[in-house]
Image (tube, rainbow, N blue to C red; front, side, top):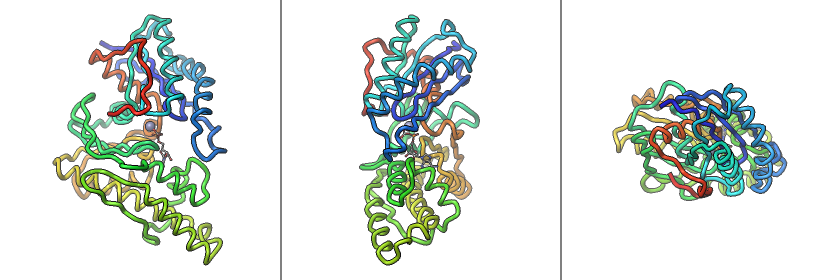
Length: 334
Ligand code: KG4
Ligand code: ZN
């Protein structure tokens, strides 16, 4: 079996389509929705509308770049969830109509599972069993991955996701949306030991990131009262210190899980795995603890349809198809 699959991702603010043939990604087109920048966050209704506008050209480009005709496709895949309901509905409805029109089988993909399976797009690939720290704007999970489609969530955030913590911290410092990448950039020239922010340590492998916002808010208020330009003058050090606290929080539980399970194959996935501080810290731990660390290529870290296509490839081989009754699930679990 060497299936050719068209995959669609529309869970949040990226409209993306990808073509995969026999497990090789032939194209991965991503249309980022700039409309949300002026609102400082994703506006769900605007995201749905932008998906509707983008989906046809994005799919056409993905097929064209892959040099694949519609008649050559063996299946159509889409993100079923988790994500924004209206946004998911666009990709799901499009995939269903496309499949119906061409008489193709449909595959529904879990977005979080796909973030993890992005590791199988390029070499080197992790060996089973491995641990994956999935860190995005909506999720923070430590997942035990036994096989392509056999995953177990060991721990997760009990409140905000770490990506949300990055974005909200950045907003409190007056940085434009999305704040995560900007905070990362500024942190590169700052001193991470200059200021102390809380490193929350819950029981087991769970996380909590909501407290750091309050601590930053109080920190900014207190220091700005004494010196109005405090944030501006110390921006790089503040960013580096916040980033360091978030990374240390993430690493504590990951190290614990790796130790408890005796696993040295460690992967990271999701938008926050683009963070340069987290990447460097992981490499550092890899040296010290003898881990093999796997980080997907940048374009496969943030939301993209290539990871949906990769997941769909494994599901196709496993005979895991859905039908025209499929519907999005905003809270779909791994
Ligand atoms: O996986 P993703 O693209 O979308 C979701 O499924 O949520 O993740 C987006 C999140 C955002 O919170 C964004 O700020 C964060 O990933 N992010 C970063 C970086 N690049 C993206 N956070 C910190 N440093 C970065 N370099
Ligand atoms: Zn994502």
